[in-house]
Image (tube, rainbow, N blue to C red; front, side, top):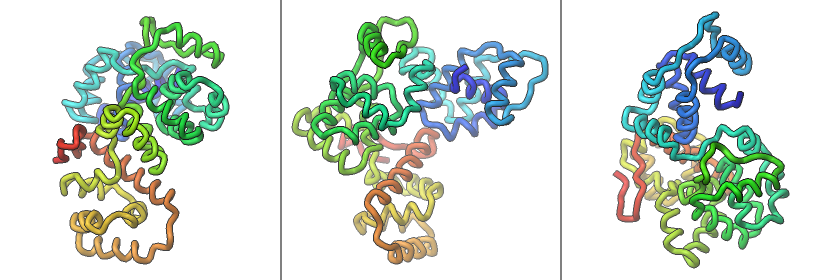
Length: 334
């Protein structure tokens, strides 16, 4: 039983309100994965429930000797309570259409737990297309770490290939699987769909600012249209200041004060002022004092704090509590 299957069984063992609270803390892609597994489950045996309970440190309660019958209404209601009806229906539709890459293959799951340095050593002699295909199966944090360890010219080549991946014949995946001494194919379709601009934007968001800028600058020169497509899907720290005041206040309620001070230490005064005006006078004064008294800070620490705030904004967007506009430069945040 995979970890995703166990997580799905755990959620289905909870009442809808509690399951919804758990789902609210997941990313949209994780919600899709769990929704898929929940949808596949029909009868959960007592033995399976006990196994999951043990693995999750007895967080799931025993269901006695009865069998838990799983219905579509339960899945629908849990998703609606977690992310709202509109987003839930989109998740359900994508599950039914199988329009996203599945994550339940045990080999892919294992690959996604491997240290990025090991993957980097394994792939450094591989063709850029092979590396792009491997990175397309990783968590975005892993892929970003692997990319940052490669020479710049190889980074840019792989980024272009990953961003333009649409579908790959099973024969090619078979060849890569043999190289990895594993099986990476999921399902019975003749092609696998993954990669693309969405994934590349997510990966670049998790890279250091210097590497992110260098890669985008290169793409501006070599493929301006692709660079524009990626930028339109990226959400950066600067974009937070384009949000409406209510959204900024919602983000500030979820953000650690130390991270906030560190994150805005280096931004323009006008951008800082937008943060201050969305706080109480007392809180704003305390934040200003924290910034003034803060010792010299490594740029990497500043970027880490900024990325943590970006993740808060993305989570709130996924929950429907704020709205992040994604589109052309003329498409303003509202």
